[in-house]
Image (cartoon, rainbow, N blue to C red; front, side, top):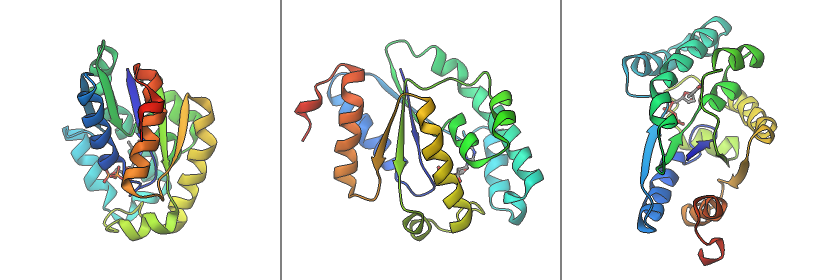
Length: 193
Ligand code: TYD
């Protein structure tokens, strides 16, 4: 099973993935986490480019689109061969659809990417996102993130999804996520506080 977390920068994906992992494991499920960009050489190159001033420019965004697509192919076998394991992923090709453009081309270059069984969108106010981020990456600015946030809200409808309000405290966000995931993994949603 492949569960994908998406959201603008600073939405709290990493914290929530860890909390969900602990809960699923406590309930007897086998869990593996993956992160995009990966720790591969391609992923390292991506992280370097993200800090450069031209990262949001059109040509560099297209270059990044290709690099993100190449980087995620590294995860493909792991996800396809998950078996009974639950794979929790920090981002996916849906990030590329939200952050890069044009969408039809992004779809084309990601046609081998895995579709999620469940997409969890942690939706956060852009002002909060900017406050939470270090500002080190060029994408972490208000105008850019407003556009990404709207793209996400339009995109989710194409998948099996849940929108989680990321403006709440960590524990409330975590229990909302558990409720959204429970039935899918065979656990009881009404047992969650
Ligand atoms: P990262 O520092 O990991 O951000 P976060 O912790 O918020 O996930 O950097 C990932 C950045 O790359 C983030 O700004 C989103 C962006 N990104 C894309 O633009 N396209 C993609 O396909 C992916 C996977 C990430």
